[in-house]
Image 1: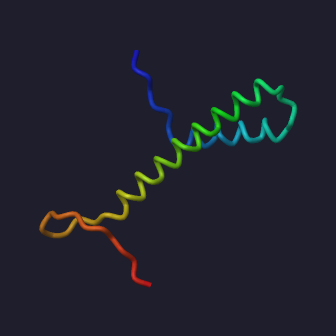
Image 2: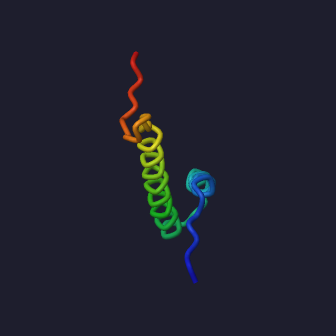
Length: 74
């Protein structure tokens, strides 16, 4: 069975849930370590996805079909 990738938004919700549980302080040490490890994994996956999307958004296609970096002039 193929493992379906969890949507970005669902990862954020799970991360928020874990943070609340850890902040609550009613989690035993072993469970807290497992939750912290899972939270760090989710945070990295979300960060990687944001970087990937940012890179895609920051590229524009020119009329001749070439892709070029997009820069905002301030």
